[in-house]
Length: 244
Ligand code: 3SL
Image 1 (tube, helix red, strand yellow):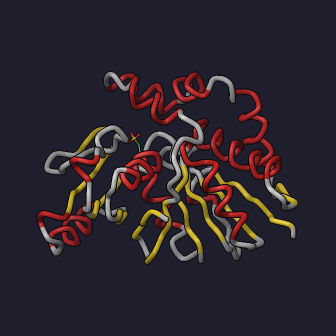
Image 2: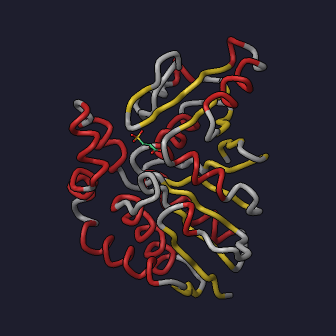
Image 3: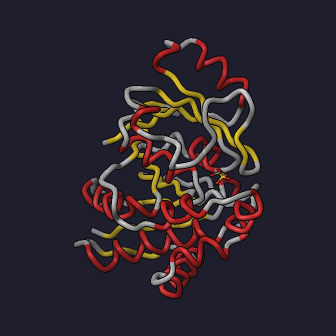
């Protein structure tokens, strides 16, 4: 079987085409946070673009079993329990809870492809298990969607798209058809930076934005780890993600 693999940098670039599987990436930091929250025992994550809608939905949930996470421009929003750091979603905080989450770009990408049959969130720490899950599903058309920054390209999401595509090409028993130029460029990017992932994240515009906001060294290290998580964040109903 041949798998057609496409990459788009941001939600607005996604064409009107049928895809069987969508993989959303926001290396810095939404999909890294989602992956770690699920690893640390969160029950589920419900994603929102709109903050008022998030608050309304969260209020209907048992207060002991919910957390509200929101970030805009890299900063936590006042009145929310947490921002968007993978280090903040510890077992003590998230165990058994639903996380109501909105971020500048990552949750928007997840909303954009929420109608695709299989939807996964991927970051560098779970690249391998997501690749293996895709292969196990026997589907033909797979879109990888980056989150970018407010509609423009991001280096780190493209890096991870290339990491996923190359892993699938080199390790799995299917023919992978690289189906657009964006993905060829991402593979070249991964080949260039794969031995200095941390350096790539810090070079990226959003990496520089985070550095200008404070000490994010530990966040960078966490987001730059490769293939250390066995969690596949999977959409189970529209907008709701669970570990599988
Ligand atoms: O844009 C997003 O979705 C966020 O991941 C950005 S930040 O890393 O939390 O600043």
